[in-house]
Image (cartoon, rainbow, N blue to C red; front, side):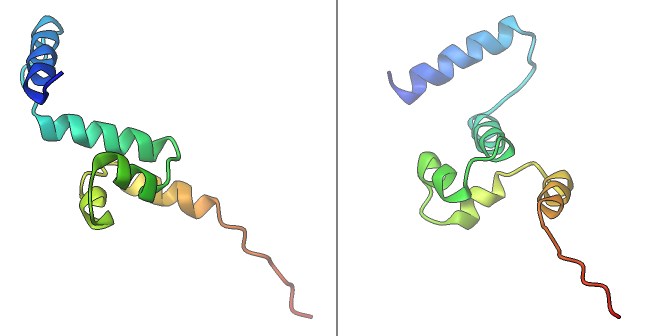
Length: 83
């Protein structure tokens, strides 16, 4: 299936779903962000997206602040009482 055939099919489905507008970068952003949001490693997502540089993949990441907060919650900081 060609990339144009995929886009044409997605455009048809978008019309049926009353989606007013979308673009290939929207689809890429969703693909990348959904993978990252579900715990996929950035390097793996980078390879799947065909990016040579992880910074390119990171530009598509729409998770924002909530991802940073979730990541910070994963840290285990040992507490040692002074005394």
